Length: 200
Image 1 (cartoon, rainbow, N blue to C red):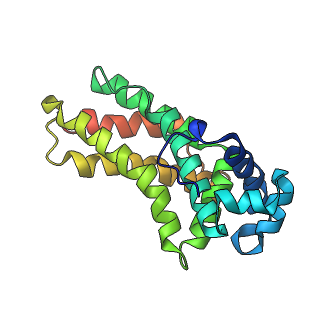
Image 2 (spheres, one colour; image 1 turned 120 degrees about the vertical axis):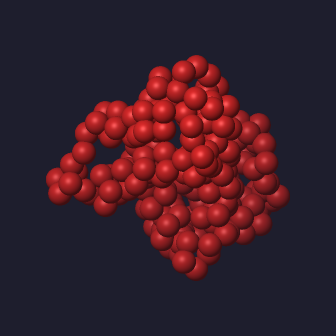
């Protein structure tokens, strides 16, 4: 049985092969419509091999959530937050928008949201591997810069990240570009300005 407490790149090759075969199936058929038989076929492995790594569909889907979360987290947050706040926050916001605005990733997030009502632990696995550590990293950075005069770094970090995620949800997942278009650069400039100048 595989759990993803390690880097996805450190997983056995067969486990990675299974996850790669499972992703398009879940995106195409949804969680309920995807079967372990189909995943085994698409991954090019026997059912015995599949079940030796992932005993059930829920465990496989949770591992897939964790894998994608870890990959995206590292793309955005692997660069240390060092330097003056104006530039650091601008660069961070741009990385978040760039790396999360990926059609496949957004489709997967949509699937997680769809399943969250009946299986909240699946969405919690996603939050545990992305939002929670991200907020902690940004909160620590803000706390280390007293010149910003921020009363509550954790809340400010949640506002910062939440604003960017809301932008992606409304513009991309809810198809809001034509209804309420907002240039990403304009959003980033004003969001950073609220934190840097608004608290100085």
